[in-house]
Image 1 (tube, helix red, strand yellow):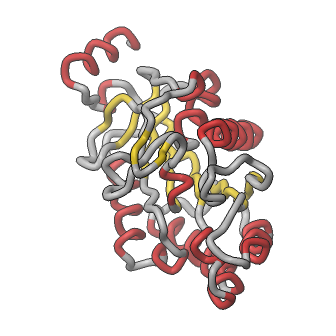
Image 2 (cartoon, one colour; image 1 turned 90 degrees about the vertical axis):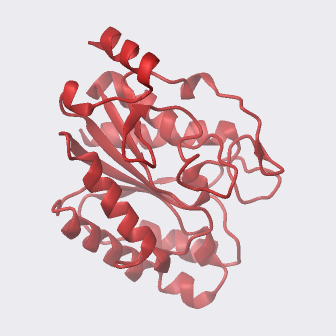
Length: 251
């Protein structure tokens, strides 16, 4: 089956998931560190793909045209448009879990520079997330988890930081309801950095989310680029593997 999949990708670049049975689908959302800025300098990606991020015919990506294709970095190249995207946590995550669960479908949805209020129900980003999630299910599969890395933009203003917990909990509840998946697992990334002085306030909010099936991995201490905001390529690989380990622990 994988040989046939490889030939399909070779000649068309696209895959019909109906031909390959249910996939394990993962939503990737949040802001720039989820979209991936590893290897980006001067708004240009260096093109270097670490071994842990290598493509695999069993790792698919839902592109901006809502079609499945073989996944490769930058995963968000046609989603977080207007910005240079590079290595993010998605590919190392998928490679980490692949041997345990089989065919993986990644649904990139992250948009750089967004605050949590821009992901509330009814906003453009929220609607796009729901639409892409529903599109990923049309030919079979199951959404296994939402991987969420966001909050750096909410560290600038006190009111944003201190209201983060309530807004994040409402976002999760709304998304679960709209996807008809009331126990959808959510794996957050507790911030490694921020744009303002309230990083610890947002991190505390992330760790304190009081909903079932919500957990986090701690990015604090991972190496940052010179901007002191975005993760290095090596750190993105490490983060993706941490997310994979967290998911596998829940199986």
